[in-house]
Length: 511
Image: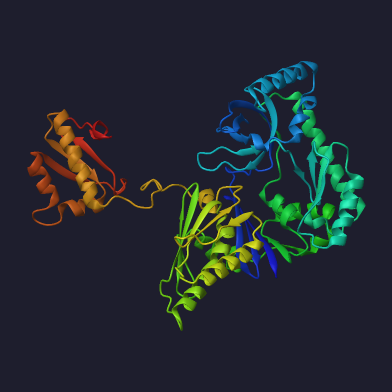
């Protein structure tokens, strides 16, 4: 499989596209005002403890408090006392330990704690944090407060796994755990030790700040999006990285010279006048990942409806013309849909609960085969997934790990007209609202003559025909209305102004 990473930088932000066999499978967007938070380490202050929820909220200095489950408070937290530093804070820590025992909770209000962001804030929800701190390097992940050694499951050779585990145990510092990453395959002890030394220096700086600073405070900021992708995803199976920014190109090459010099020749600076994403046909695919409807080659299509907590995907036959036996044709359509859904989940970075309504198939055997194939297709997904069998209602229910908001929520804003609903009020209903507003004003004031400011489309709607809606409205309510077109208003908006006083009366009748 040919893998490529494309990096496009502009004044509005940075986009990273990952291609497999020249097909877009993942896209990452980082805007200046939406910097990545995952991996950041904070000294937070516990604000609320909810024993019944088994969780607490931690102030980390952001607009919304972070959410910490008791189950995410690991062994490292037990060693946090000495990290605080001076004798006075140590005494406070011991008192807090006693209070926690009385309340049977691991944390108490106003307690300071080191936490790391595990999931970005999504919608109205704050960041999800954990007290199990990890520091990722190029080849190793340092885990303070633990003593275990692990090796990436993606390294399949049993001999290589044993070799790397032996090296990790040999260089592991006391009081720290180590996880060997996939890119460490084939690396020697000197390379791993150098990476470990850099991680230990970073941890020492974090400890030093933790002793000095009072929470809430940011102690460590993880790499930006581009740097983290190069660190985590630029593995030997990636054929090349193409970047259209000289600054980013120099940064990437400088980083790789230290950690993986053999990968430097695979980094290319894009110099052509045609935009990078256009040259690789990525721009069209990027636009498609925002579309509600995705067409399949067979003529069928997928519909994506996304909320903050749940995603519904509907498979429709559309223009699909079956050839041969009906159920077999439906099975082929569902298989094609499963392939595209697996790609779209990665491309749109959809997470949480996902419900898929495939085209119904009576055969249980074909249902089972479809789910098995869908699970196989999801193996390339780096996010953790869990797929349930097709339910009695013909639905596939699944979950996909969510670390950050989906692409749609990251790069779009709620429509100011429909307020994110995706629909606007019909013209008859807007006309009804105007009439209700006129009647309310009549009950509150003696005014009978008004200016009505509406969008030009509503002017046409209200005045079309001899016995038009505007005339009927005036006769019914014993008022005089003069329409004023205003293209600054949207279709749903209107303003009512008194002709006598010039006063804007719209706010009087808003509910």
